[in-house]
Image (cartoon, rainbow, N blue to C red):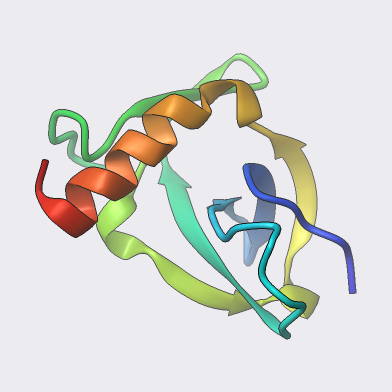
Length: 96
């Protein structure tokens, strides 16, 4: 099982996903992720645009899910864009 940390980008069935689960939680076979999609409709602050390897992706925040770690393959990291990701999660959970 590959070690994944918060803001890592991993792929599952050719879909890129951002790990959003805290690194402080105990190990679990699943991890919480948000998909990165190229053609997802944007809602201000809820679906920020992230750049990964020069390509633009929409954070599909409403599609947040848990995926088995063993099915994911790490492909990058977007920690430098963490403010946008955290804001999107806040908007999803609190509406603000």
